[in-house]
Image 1 (cartoon, rainbow, N blue to C red):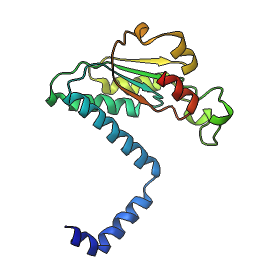
Image 2: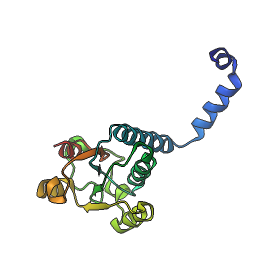
Image 3: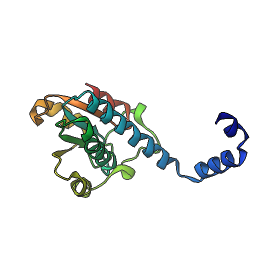
Length: 171
């Protein structure tokens, strides 16, 4: 098989051309989805109960992927999981100087929380979920996980793009 791959310049060329024509955003999201699926697989194998917490929900595509991954692991046995999503839905707000970046602007990452909620609700299929709107420095310091009813975290997905908000999530 390796010898065939070494001699198959046509296949290598065609594959590299296809990948180079594909938006890097697609590859980024695909890799993110695979990571979410792996996390659900490993925690399902171990029968680890707990909630899924996503920090940086934006449109809800990763959140929906998490729900799909959870349902697809039913063959491992039942694991109870609720889904919590945290996002300002208004962009980043005030940023520290070290978090300034030309791509990470409020206008790019602002979205109606209702649009995101409807997107997730269409795919929830009975799974319990809650979106917590607000900037992390408000929502994560004003209430604790216990205030939301979270006693155990199965998977935490931190996708908030900036150092300071990510540090708040880790705390």
